[in-house]
Length: 316
Image 1 (tube, rainbow, N blue to C red):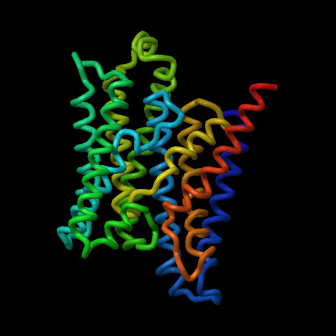
Image 2: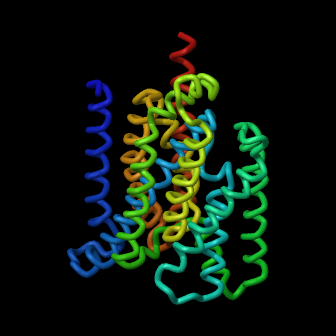
Image 3: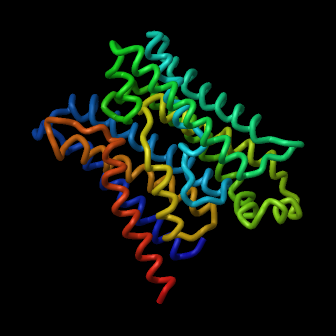
């Protein structure tokens, strides 16, 4: 790996360590309190780390598969479907600890099956048709979420929590371990197929000539991304912008190689979400803003700044 990439990985890792440590110390309770640190802030910081890795990795995979730098888990309806599944489990008041995982991940897989079924013709799944089917799926599941919000007003807080995305309910240690394990599986699958993504970025016909099973690779990566998104939505709701902005920014910094991009996105996504969580719970303290709101408010200006900077470099 090049020295340029190693320097950026070291920088991202250092930023993540500093931000993670800060998240344990910064809060409304300013004096040292082990119960607050280990029972509240540590699980919350770990959750931010896991969800950030999941969303940024899924975004990098979607952008590579769809050959669209603005693609993210929302574009194929995965996030909306995961939110719908988690809401159904919440409204049905299931007490099984991992019901949210089953419903959220199951809904993500179901949405991908529907999208693939709609988009596939004669054994081929054109990218443009896949995107259109994904947009329809996203709209459909978003409408179902709003329908639940309207019908189950007594559960309105839970519904709103999943719609905006929040790390305020960090969950148990085991739930974070389960999510972390699922995210690790999805990350390893993405890294394993990174070279295939590089080949497919030049066009599917070229990738087929290189001996890559394009349709099989697409299916595996889409469903592994559904696993990543479902595992994150089950714990933190629907947090936008991480899967869009982080891979796009890091592609400008570390280059288009998907192995490098996925690794950098995983660390960058964790750093970004833990940082946003600190801001969301401290800036307007004691009022806490859902972290999904902050990821959009703070991430968009930075994204525009980098985009404009890149445009000037291309002009001059």
